Amino acid sequence: MSSHHCDAALAPVVCPLTMSAMAMHATRLVARTSGAATLRARSSAFTGRAFTAAPGSKRGFRSTAVTSMALNTGIVGLPNVGKSTLFNALVENSTAEAANYPFCTIEPNSGIVPVPDQRLQALATISGTKTDNIVPTTVEFVDIAGLVKGAADGAGLGNKFLANIRECDAIVHVVRCFDDDDVIHVDGKVDPLSDISVINFELALADMAQIEKRIERLNKGRAKSNADKEAEAGERDALDKIKVLLEEGTPARLADLTEDEWAMVKDLYLLTAKPTIYAANVNEDDLADKGDSNPHVAVVRKHAEEEGAQVTIISAQVESELIKLDPEERDEFLADLGADEGGLQSLIRAAYKQLKLQTYFTTGEKETRAWTIKEGFTAPQAAGVIHGDFEKGFIKAETVGYDDFIVNNGFSGAKEKGVWRLEGKEYVVKEGDVLVFKFNV
Image (cartoon, rainbow, N blue to C red; front, side):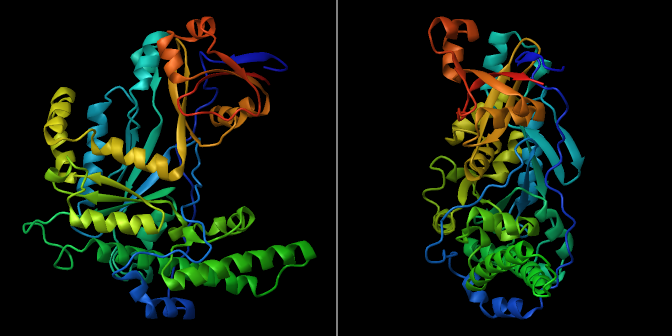
């Protein structure tokens, strides 16, 4: 359509969205450089204590999620912590919870699952959308295997593990927080902090190897122009800051870098820079109080707080049992355990919080769909998640909050009550907004 005014409401999707996440060919990592040796010598920084932020650093994380695509989340953990059990249960439970929603298994260890959101059905009912045309946003879970001590040097599946995890937007680190004599721990005892330290140490070694390789290349001084020389110097400074933190046992995501400096190092896809959610795997008895009485969970929470990560309480055992039940039985089973929600919902909620993501909706007779965006996105940026032309030709956005939309039975009722708004380019989209984009293409 050329020079035409369009409303993106009833059919908001102009072209299919790809479901691939960030891709990168992983470099073979051989962490035997001098810096890696220093890090090994200081391995106590990863053992028996939490990460500590460098003085003046900003606690938290940086979100680099590609929000127009499926959120790619890697599930990691040592053997016998319940990682694969949890992955299989999450994937199977998603089909049970949302039989009509899109679902696919990419390969045995990867699956795209719908994000459960009861608001979609409520919107669809008002808009007259058929069930088959209700489209949730999605999360891709990847069960990343092969991590053992020495993975950074190729032990176990080593480099394959590191390549897989580099492609993820966020890391879900499953930590064993239950005692069970029938399930042997790889190190002979349940010690969540030790388990965390093993994985974090291997990730840090891999990052150190990447950084030192890049610094070596920068030191060759191939830049010709003054601008290129300045850029190289800036990148070298940023890498030096991260390197110091890694040697101290601090993840890269806590580095006190400017936005420009983060942009300089983003192509390295540093593993310890990725947002992390710790999934504390507990027995079913711990679900009622959300793990508050579990001393292992307390240790994980303290560690996560110190490194700016999220913690979600989950029971892989319970999730595997939910697979066998129909929706009503599932709700009753969870209620009997004192749990407010299943593991899939709690894990996704934690991931969204850690990545600072939110959801808005488009709805009409032809389709009702959820869209994932970063917090702080303006209306044109939110429109661009649907299609680039929507952002380029953005004019206005008809806007109604979710609650107002439901209470007033749609756009017409919202207009009558004065809660319908026409927002411009500076409007920052809020969680749950129901939008109609007006644009020229």
